[in-house]
Length: 299
Figure (cartoon, rainbow, N blue to C red):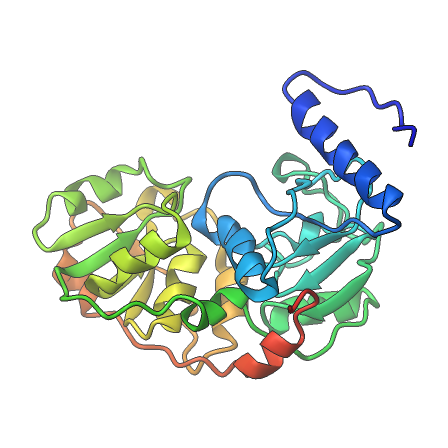
């Protein structure tokens, strides 16, 4: 087996060499190589793709090829607002667009310029919500009416005994909002616990379950709150209020019985009592069995 000659950049040599070795090994065994494609930020909303693949398939998760997928390998895209990074080798199961109007074929967050699709995914099994499906259909990309973020399936694979509630309010800050000054005073309020999006999925869930209510600027903080039947509220710090993230939140909430059309803006004066008064328990309308059976790697 002769590996292709690829000019590798500094910092990518090891990762790319491992990918090439996996490709070579599977070609020798006449077996198609599938990888995962998600952000390597460590954010729970991305890492949960790895977790769910292993729990559902019963196999060790394949390597993450990242958004660029320089070797054009078949890949599964599961959770996260990353559909705009799909390529012609992507198999979509539950992901969605970050914003309306984006096309498929982008290579990173700094280059979200493609409005029309340069590529069509290999297959779409399910998408996060109806808004994502509408975007695809408008671009003449067939998409089944199968909805749901796969993180909703988490209680089927991790359902620990419900612990004693230690905190009244759990706060999940999106990883890009963690240093917002609007969170500082809230951190010092009693009965408030900040849950890190960089915790592994099971620890993240454990910490959520120790709280009575959840306030989150992270989409997967809300999705997992719904999955585990915790009242929640979508928040956004005031200094980030100009950042429009509404598409992905409304896309997801369209699969529930309650759509919060805009976030609760968090200021330095906002108290946990204020936040809790807005928390609501959303009920999912997703057919979880249909979503699970649509999984392309089910064991």
